[in-house]
Amino acid sequence: MNSWEINKIAGALLSTLLLVMGINMLAGALFAPTLPERPGFEIAVEETGATEAVEEPEEETVPLAMLLAEAAVEDGERAARKCSSCHVFEQGGDNRVGPVMWEVLNRAKGAIDGFGYSDAMMEVAANGEVWGYDELDGFLANPRDYLPGTSMGFAGIRSPEERADLIVYLRSLSDSPAPLPELAAAEPEVPGEAPAADETPAVEEAPAVDEAPEAEEAPATTE
Image (tube, rainbow, N blue to C red):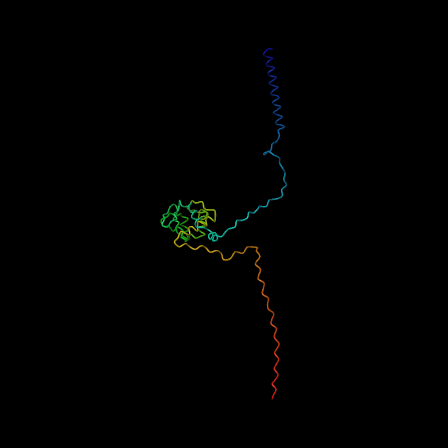
């Protein structure tokens, strides 16, 4: 067998192989299945309208006066340890990153001489604001929300109970601690609650029956 015949046989095999490959590719293009974007079966669900949003119950807000009445100075002193790197709590202490905390309750804002307060603090100080119970509670909850522009970088105390403990501790830092706020004398009326039933009215007494008139005495007989 000469080389010419070998080349013819090789060419025929190569042509056949190319033809088979071409047919295979053409068939794959024509009959390729369409795959979904996500694997699985699509299940048709009948729409029943928009789902009503479920309202989460609001957390009951406990009045600050009640929290302060139940707070403990010892717990507040422990809570104040996280502030000791920036504040001094002893009488006659020096200012650090923050001003001294002795007698801070009912003290005028921005009142410590020589301390570099922020412009935001000096602005409210010019309005005569003081550090009352509500003001301390709001500032300790989130200083930057309570006073935008403050230089205090503390993130705040989320727990109302912990803030109350800390406030009663700050209240104790004085030779004459201020009185705690008084609780409301009367409980607020609950909406929708039926009013208390009135007491049964007293039964009126029947009018007294007039007594029969006394019989007139007979005139004395003349002797």
